[in-house]
Length: 500
Image (cartoon, rainbow, N blue to C red):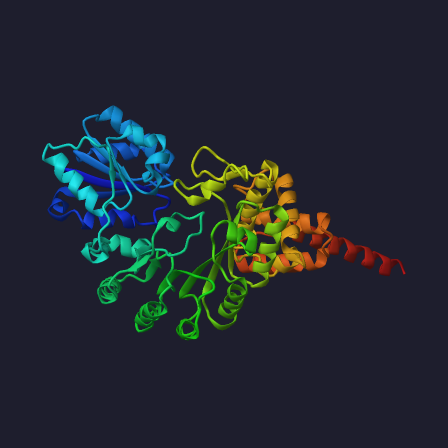
């Protein structure tokens, strides 16, 4: 079967669905009947992806390019260019949307669409299929009112609904100007028609969708809309319903609190971008955040709702230091979110934070994901230590598997104690990857009891409880040693009694 247009991308994982592709497809008008969607993951071999893309002999291939799939997408495009040079390749997405800062991939393709692509892609494909190829190879995305867009939700397949995250958006844009984020380039946030949006959500729900991930940058910006959406889902509470929202940390009025408190445990995840508690850094990167209100709201959410709180911090912001970051980390730990996502600053193409590069000597990895390597105030070795900290924190702090042991690790100075644990774990294992869970437990025991002056009995007891709860099989090495010590002591006592 042949097709004229093929829209594709490489997702980070199979469970992710390409929301942007479905928007492009929905707005192709009469060209939809001549178009296919194909999704892949970055774990698949580029040559296998190229083979599948070319099976239907497309005339046009449109590819969404992101920071996480740039390298793999470049390989796929190079293969298609070699095998089928007659195919027209169009790319779009955040990674190619800034003409003054485009990656090499743009030189491999025929056309680049910058910014919103729903309308511009359709017009470009109409021209190409009519034999009227435009001379300009970089095409600015056409912005239209949201009510002029065809919504994409009907193009989620039954397989998507069964096996993948269902991405939805009630609004686009962001009124805030945090310089590390591309949303800072938006003029404001615009909302889709609420009634139309909820009709689409009901259709998805009736089809069996239970996992809704809202990609709105500021879900609680307009509280009346937030409450209406939450009430909609409260009326449809069922086993398996799970909602993910990104919320502004310092905007939680009583009306919103009241509805959040009505959701049962394990049905809400709230992503809360704290990023830093330092007011000077906040001002430097144009971030407006009431730190006292943020702390108060986080504390209230943990004490009064069943929501899973995923809070974000960023290391490496202009002017940040290790000690300064430690203070933000310790403040956040004290507020007890279930997860702390420790992110390393990345150089997003087009982001305003790039204006600080020279002053603060921000040096980034030249390859995606463009993570910060060093700054004026943080050397490369320290940056590497914090990268390892972040990896071990995911395995130990965020996993939920070390519930009883984590307080023993963190003590009264969470950042420095966990950094010491991380440094020693890395020295012993020489890696942060491919360490089995059982081995992590054994290494944590060794570090705490031999290198951090923790009471071995308390460490052993807490780790045993956590290990049993994890469902892992087999006896831990330190547990066996402890039993052997007890057995030997028992034999010695028995012999002593016999002698007497």
